Structure formats: C-alpha cells, structure tokens
Length: 189
Image (tube, rainbow, N blue to C red; front, side, top):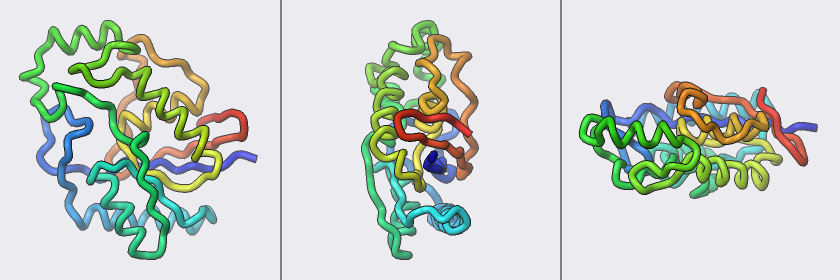
C-alpha cells in the first residue's frame, strides 16, 4: 500500500523578484503562512493523514509548520528539505551573476555546483534519503520549488537530469504535489 505524501511549496516571499534565492532567509507575509497552514490542515483531515508536518528550517517554510504546531500538530524540521544551496549566488540578482556563470551550470546541470554550493545531483540525493526514511509514513511537507521538483523525479524513478531543459517548471507558491510512496520504491501521482 502506498503512503500519500503531500508536498507544499511555501507561500510567496517578499522582495525576491529577479534574485537567486536558495538558502537565503526571506520573509513571508504572516497571513499567507497562516492561510497555507489552514489549507494543509483541511487537506490532511480529508485524506486522514497524521497531524505531522515536516518543514525545511528556512523561515518561509518553517513559519507554516509553527502555525500547525499551535493547533496541536507535530512540527518536525529537517535540513534535507531545504532549497538548493546556490553558494555565492544566493541572494544576488540574476543579472549580477552573469550569463557565463549560468551557462556553465546549465551545460553541466547534474553535477555543477552553482556558486560553489550544491549540485542538482546532491539535491536529489538528499531528497531520496528523506523520502526513503520519512516519505513511506505519508503526511505533509512544506518545502521549496527545487526540492519539490527533485522529489517528483525521485518518486517517479527518474534519473538526475543532465540538461536544464529536463527540469520541470516550479510548482506555484502555496501549491502542492502529491507523491505516492511505496515501501521499497516510489512513484509519482
């Protein structure tokens, strides 16, 4: 029997337009975090999921978990749920990073660590570790667009993409992706 893992993207942060945002702390409107927490609570109730939420330690995800904790949920923080580490690029404007640096990353999408941070292969590896340990229990996760894309690929049994064009478009802010995690394997719904 597959376990349902619902992975939500954090609410839209403030002041990030045109910037490379990975591990940089950025604020989210408190009302939006609370609104997403309500939606998660309602969906979990409909799906008979445990009252447990895993979040990344980054404020834009963890704030949602803190609201759920106020309502009696268990809030578990896991570093493996963090966004891709963009190293020196993080927080900078894309226009300042430069086309040559971005091209170097897209030319070696799987293993190049943008800004000296973390490669997509490394992101998918920590995503796989989380899904292997926690995903089979089912429940709710609040994470980031890059992590969600990695989780979708891992759960579908897809390899690390070698081309940037193989990476899917980001899930919308405060939207979710459903993953059916089977014991000994996973597949995407």
